[in-house]
Amino acid sequence: MRLTDQERSLRDGAHGEARARAMDLLIRYGEALGAERLVESRNVAGAFNASTPSVRHMADDGFDRVFSELNLDADDVVDIPHMAVPTCQLITGIDNDNYELQGVDPGLAELQKQSEKYLGRRGINMMCTCTPYQVGNVPVKGEHCAWMESSAVIYCNSVLGARTNVEGKESTGAAGLTGRIPYWGLHIPENRLANRLIRVEADVDDMADWGVLGYFTGFEVEENIPAFDGLTHQPDLMKLKHFGAAAASSGGVEMYHIPGITPEAPTLDAAFGANARPDPIVYGRAERDRTWERLQNATDRKLDFVMLGCPHNSIEQMSLVAELLDGKRIHPDTALWVHTPRAIRQMADRSGYTEVIEAAGGVVMSDTCPSISRRLPQGVRVIATDSVKQAHYLPAIAKVQGWFGSVQQCVDSAIAGEWLGKVA
Image (tube, rainbow, N blue to C red):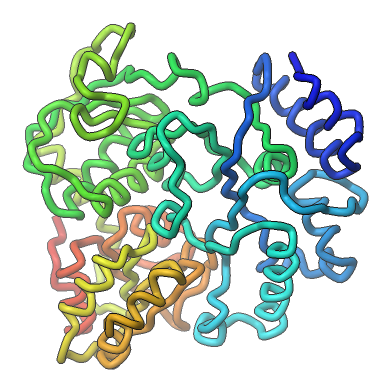
């Protein structure tokens, strides 16, 4: 691998042991990937917080050990300095305010709080969300990033036009300390061109429609890059957020192009560039209905739990949930958790949305979600969600039945205590 003078000095220890270990990790990682060089990155989003029982024994020796083992792949303890570039913490396993409701041991909750203080002193911003782009981390077109979290990565590449692969704890930890990441995959312009075409012949408008299209897309294209033809409605942040999360759940999609919408595809020809345009995959009403039915992993209509906000809700979504719940009451046998980033939670508090949701019997949660925490209300057997991602993962993770539907269907069902939405 070709290294610059600065990179060689990092590797050779001129900037401290931790940065030398980080550079060694990135060189080995890049060589395994076939990367010829590293690229500068000043935007890192990773998982650094200690919020699981498995790290408790490591934290007994201090948080330097936790970072060394989990984020640098080091067997010994390294003194961890301040991050070299802007770095943020993604979603965690615990809501610091609602940990008791989650069923989290108080000692583990306190461990997370102490971890956050440690990380903050080292320049890691506690955004604690799967949607850092909603709370201030918005890279620009062409910017090289080092991000984890599949739904964040696909949004970063496709909607923002920044460049990142799906990174891991180790590579993001090393990137934060060095400001470097291997130059491979979606960092390379020619690798970002479309190689699959989806012709949309069904109407795709509301958020649920976009989620279903994303779920279909992931199954059809797997890890390839699709471009779309035939979409007639202008999507907003919420719709593209849910679309991307769904495509990254059913497949390994890290990037897509919608001509006239996403920044690297002013036209369909531009989306494909030098690549030949393949025969289209058709998404019509029949495909839409089959995909919707595929998302219904339940037979029992009696609901124990409704989960909204995966990826984390925007302020507009919090407003919608509050509007649908205003003056109503959730069924006593059904729990409702609404998830949003903590920064947006503050806006929801000031706007009165949190008060309305809580008055109806719901809970507003931040920092986490049931798929990450693997924690639901006790005794849950049947859930409903507006999230394709949660509908895909939670039945397997938590061994529950799951219904998928629109926000309206989920809220109405939470009030009724039974699933009122469509089965297919």
